[in-house]
Image (cartoon, rainbow, N blue to C red; front, side):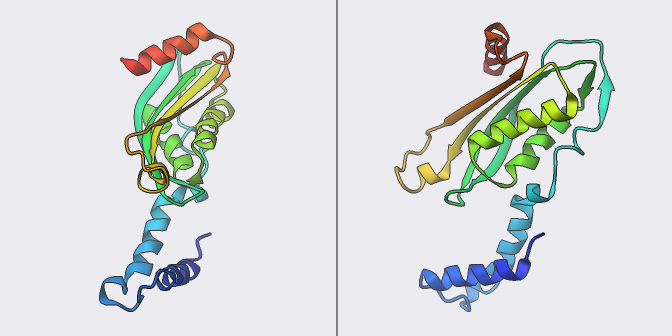
Length: 185
């Protein structure tokens, strides 16, 4: 899917556009570095949440499962600058649970794309609902956006919080409050 040559050419054009010489010693290998970096930071464009959420285990419990403080890095699609933070992912199993590392992998699949935080939050919850068919899911992201901290308004340390609820979580304030309490512990 990646067109490495177009990426190289684009980087050279940007360097020229800002008044740099792409043939300068320090910049000579920059287009190739950017190609390798894009393969890594945008790997989610070539992945789905289906694979990581396939390894499941039978369970008798119907209590909330919460994986919190999952560090993620993504890229703001408006400025192509990073945003990063913590994801908190919960679901109520309906006979099956997934390996805990698979929740973190699911966050990674969607974070490694040009994104909006609001969309990222919903995509994680929707993937859980589609793949695991739990009784409900809730996802909260807390992130710092470099497009707000290093440019524009320049407010380092500001945090954007988004959350979504699905299934049982949607209208159950007690369940939502339990999620928020567990995240704070």
